[in-house]
Image (cartoon, rainbow, N blue to C red; front, top):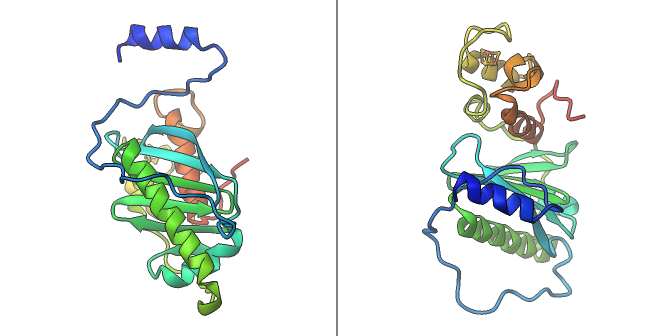
Length: 226
Ligand code: SF4
């Protein structure tokens, strides 16, 4: 879509806030045949999901990220999912469970799901559907699962590094962005010390939300989400 077409669309829909644009990507995945799954009585933990934020993935602009808000509540389910997903990282105090679905990064909160690095909207929808199925299956099997409150290792610092400017300017006090990412990961510094991202309205301020999100998902100290 051209710049002019975007401007026309924005002016034709004054009640809608446009926060960015995602270029259309041809889907590699296909939607399954058949009707959409019915909402049933026992689907109490997930229920309906609404995609509220959709944008290009900060770590890879050819992919997309989204935030879906849930009608249900995943909070009581998270310890059970932690038990059945050995690679997940669970933070009981923050009520967050993060894991990889292939190359996609998933973070589950009680009433919110974030997906990063989905290929396109169909892939994102299918990923959301896989999560829904996993949630419902685990919830219905919970009497046979011992809930786990174990906190496992955090995802690699590389995921933080991918969301930093990558200029190695040194303003955070570290010689490189990678060194800074390692210090964030180990909780030795605050992500907000990356001044090009947090103090200036400029070409790196768009990284703020993604950085805060991944740090919060990893339960890193020194992160003020306010
Ligand atoms: S201030 Fe930010 S951009 Fe500069 S080196 Fe540190 S992490 Fe990288």
